[in-house]
Length: 121
Image (cartoon, rainbow, N blue to C red):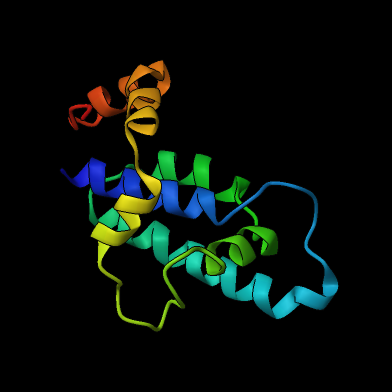
């Protein structure tokens, strides 16, 4: 379970990151904050039993990507400060049989679900 929770954190960090070029000087404070965040992720990973070599191999390749943050903040469902909206209306509008069948047929999603012990639905 410890590795799974760190895998989730690492996936989140990777989603908020990109290894595309150097940081823009105008974003120096944001880059500094991101590097501090990565240090905190590394410390948490160590506490959860992830090896130092894994952390040292993964985290240095990550860089802040403002486009990812912008896309994340424009997700449906309101702002990050708003209460979590009910899932049922979203599911009714956006999740249909074709989408579920497409996900189940995707070998990458199936292998990922099997690897992390989440059965495909």
